[in-house]
Length: 371
Length: 120
Image 1: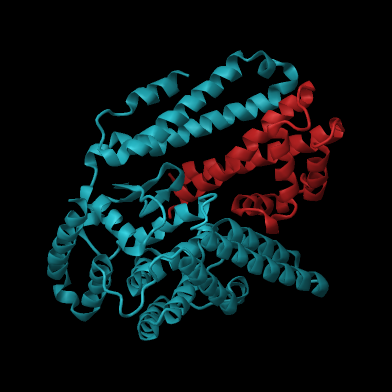
Image 2 (image 1 turned 90 degrees about the horizontal axis):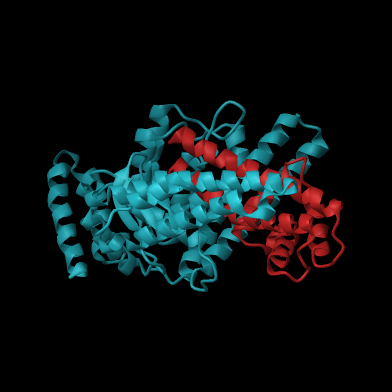
């Protein structure tokens, strides 16, 4: 109880308007935790011996909730003085440009772990200093998609969620067929175990990540694929690694699969030449990294299934009436972020200087939205 | 999205149903709940939908998959329990599987929180 009350008293006063919603969410959830703890201590029904298993579980949940609020919300509110007005104006500008159907999250530059979003807190964390550069700002579009998938009762967003569900059905049917084949063929139990793990990964995490990639790709264009290629080159693991007993990411699909999805997506919306160009660079990276897909990868991420993901997601984004880019799209943020990647490849030696003036131009454009 | 944010998402998705389950369990054990109580009705719907996630929402699909390989949980048995919650026919044979489900949901949340801490 003392800890919860202390956390409430740590919520700063006089925060910028953008933080008011986060402050409300944080305060309300802390009060709920304290109410729950009070019941666990004092409610006679809860104290009965037969209810102790429930009491213990409720106590753990209350502590987990407090941990989450402390490490995410309070930390963000405490550092709200470092609030980056430019990034918040930028996200508002993006919201308008792409006809994003929800309120934009508040953006704070205090991430120590790349871009991340906490949809229930309406909070997006970006790395410190990211507002001074352009090449990875496309990731903000990816982060914007996460809240869409947990929204409820919003008919405007339902097409995107319907498409997501359709993909989970396709994936489930495919893996169940593979499991059945293993069963009939009497294959090693380890393969069936892998297939079950992959299905869990697909449903719990990977489909979400692929849909967020595709939302970004369809609403921004090639810049998102370039940004992902750069990220995979600089921070990625084996691009064809799938979860096995020894390694592989359960949280994110293999970078190779993400690239297949994006290249197909680009082709679907009229950027076939750009897809060819990106694929060529991607293949150079694979050659340099000596990376090759193995049978596990091919079984976990069949190409046709990845293409279906891209096709279903496109229908979902269109169904939300968001702006889907095409080669004729002409909007400020879209132009600057796509232009940055063109400039980067065209004239890498002078890119840093070009970027400084482009960042300033973007700031001026975003100020127009604010005024 | 980072691993930390992702695991917090899993934790949040499960939490609402875990809370509902514990609330109804206390009522069932105390004999204080009635079939048409709002929470009991919601839990019944959840248990039924869990066994047929094609018609469920994303959260339902997620929980269905998380529990799929859990030897302690029989999702078709839970669907029948969901139907029994709409009647007065509630005894230990209803309470015990619900206790196991509550423990499994707790375990999934604990795993998500542990992974958040590990990577944080």
